[in-house]
Length: 583
Image 1 (spheres, rainbow, N blue to C red):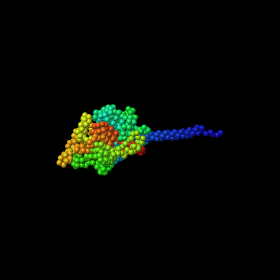
Image 2: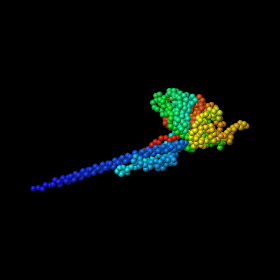
Image 3: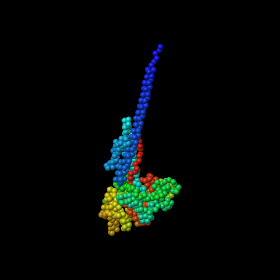
Image 4: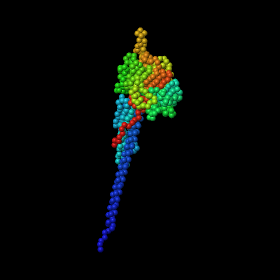
């Protein structure tokens, strides 16, 4: 007989081995699943960190933009508002009551996020394109469900810029009350009021009409108008070459010409836009920043080869008295030889001007600008109608003349020393026609209170030169004893204004007119070629008046892309320059 092996003794090791194999496999699967779960948790946490960091970044950019806008609105007179960015710390931008605190250790969608400022750079104060570039880092940290700490950091460089104020997009812009009355006013361009607008049935507005709700001057934003507009064909035949082009520019053109006269839209019922929000009008404030800019740019006014102004004029006035009331005031007469301007210049006092102007630039006056005769470009821009080659026209107009006249006080038209001037305008430069309004604090130096009560015929606490006649020598001379001065009058004295004023009524003004207070006075049948931007408007005309908007002023106009004459700026929408994920 033979001994047989036990079945149980063989099966048991096999079963145990199988169990071990299964356990090992199960453990591997579990480990793999756990590892995958941990990795998935890390990936999810990473995505959450990235989302949280970008969210915090967007919140910070908006907060900085809003605070910068608040600073601008509280300081609307500053040319270089970007100095706000000069004061910053790791978690804040700005200073004082206008400090924008950034997120620091804040929970954003489950991640802890901090936003830091790592750098700020600014363009020079005299730069044509003015900007501040802020580099921000948003770092987000989160602990995954498995206890692993995850972090991500996003970095962006954001540009906060200043661009030409949108008030220059209008042929006629007034801050208080807009009116086209008298049976002969035409605007070839958009018109706007930060108040009510009233237009009679003989007016033509070849563009849009806007009015705004403005409690300061008790305006409800209504438009009372029976004004008309011209069809495209009538506009082509009647508007003239100084008016802006249409869109499209010809019958065969299909492309939209940005900011051109959109007849189809106007005819479609969108001509009137009442009850709008106020479009802020910047104040011309501290002239020192403009003086610095003029010096940096080497700006000048010349005539017949002689430099009259080298950036800034603060010298003896026309009276010849070193400390006379007209110190810092200037007379510019381009009747026989053109006045040649190159860049922005500053005149401390009043400016008396007429005649031909050549070049591109802006005159900033510390008080009034008196236009006492026709003011015309030597080489004016021209827009043919219709125009099958608008790009060629645009390029040709780029170098044409452009003059900005910007006054901290008023722009006064015509010869106010004639009794008829005041009798014609008085009702429109006093209350109740003129409503009280808030003034820029820097205008206190030229006699304006914090709230101007509305009477431009009142004394402004300043002085003007008085001229006396010597019967023996048959000559006029400036007296050392000045006289009291009214808001609309010049410091140079009535004699100078009367001598330089042309005898005939003004018929043409080629310029961008901008001031802190009023444009007022008398003209004949007159064409304003450029733009008129003012707080109050009191123009008394005879015959008819036409406002031809210079499309080169348009913020989005192709005609003005390379155009710079240093007009007042406002904050532009911020834009991202660079983006990267640092970690």
